[in-house]
Image 1 (spheres, helix red, strand yellow):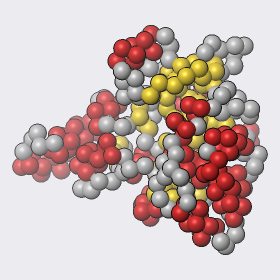
Image 2 (cartoon, one colour):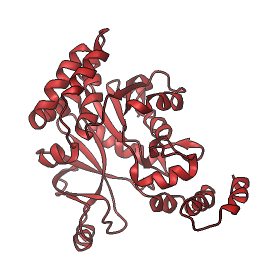
Image 3 (cartoon, helix red, strand yellow):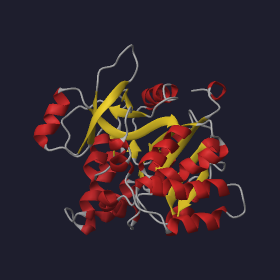
Image 4 (tube, helix red, strand yellow):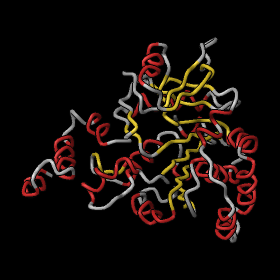
Length: 320
């Protein structure tokens, strides 16, 4: 998507999670329990760096907001020093994905009330960037009136992903979302797979005003606090205001408390691009099975799990 075609398209990148399920692998790679979005798993780059680079194809760095945990702000700034105009905002505390999304939305809303926004998790792997970009472009282009989700076309009845059930597409428009299933049992996953449901990637696009209205309707306590913060942005007082609103911030989950209660959501199928939510070491290895990183990662993980002797570590180090 060229800059000249859309000067109001922003990207929010969610990088505030703890990455608990991948700690075994990140500990094996870094000697510490580093959240997976900051781990150097593939091609010598972190997932956060890869996500920011991917988003740069449709949003200029100055229209990109990355939300991180306060204790990881320094690490995020170090990893993104090549993108000096990216706006990195630190959450004073983790209050769930509801506030985690409303915080960067407040910053976008304050600067560009006419913006359309793409929301990206930072823990996804994408093998082929161009098909991914085409799906984001379609969702963003159609998102003036309603929030559009991106659903990955499944290749198996996965029980560890959330699912989106779409209705029929009419006149080529993206299908309405009819319901969500969060990590269904195997019998339900098989039925969803047969019936053409999609994996929920948690990638979204929509007008910032529509996201803001959903927050006002479905998370009114949180939205009222972020309204106070939004009005302080650009002043010398915004840091103090942010600390104050978080002292009273109720926790909320954006999927459960907003998306699953919202009406009129639409879904765009994700073009085949090798997408994976790297939630477990097994998914990482599956994605990289044909890549040169596979052998090193699998050996490091095995060593971390105690399946090979520590005496093999020098050979493993030389493999890098």
